[in-house]
Amino acid sequence: MLHPASIADALAMLAGGDARLVAGGTALQLEWAKGLPKPRSLVDIGQIGGLKGIVPAGNEFRIGALTTLGALERDATVREELPLLAAAIRATAGPAVRNLATVGGNVAGRTGCLLPALLALDARVESSSVVGRRTLPLSEWLRQEPGGEIIEAITVPVPGAHVRWTHRKIGLRAAFTPSVIGAAGIIEIVDG
Image (cartoon, rainbow, N blue to C red):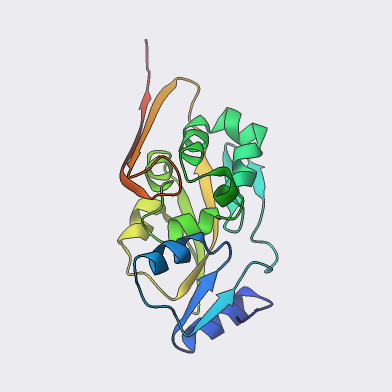
């Protein structure tokens, strides 16, 4: 296990060959349970500063990539201002897993249970690679070829006061199973 001190160090370790990022490790466990190969080395980014936390900024939230789903679930402001995201988190795995799993890992795997809600909320992904930092709408980021970058944060706009939302997840079991089908949507009500 490699322990970089910074994002730049972690990116250099990734460029060296068969290595994977890890923070909570829950997504990797699912991959290995499916029989996918294990990487030669793991790059533990869990102690890199500045990648954790929930920061309200105007009419949106900046959620550090290493923020656990459990921390998001317990945040009263997130529950109040982003109820769609809160519902998606409650439907993801069990409490013990949510205390390990990170929002960045959920997004980075490109199959995470939060993706439908984050897409409906027009979330953006802040990431770093060897060529620099960038911020992209999640929908565009998902169309990019994966690899070679580290998610730093997810920025989620707060929906207007007159919206209705829905979220559904269908999995093989009630807990600790990825979605087979996930759907989320927001409708804005104008003039009744």
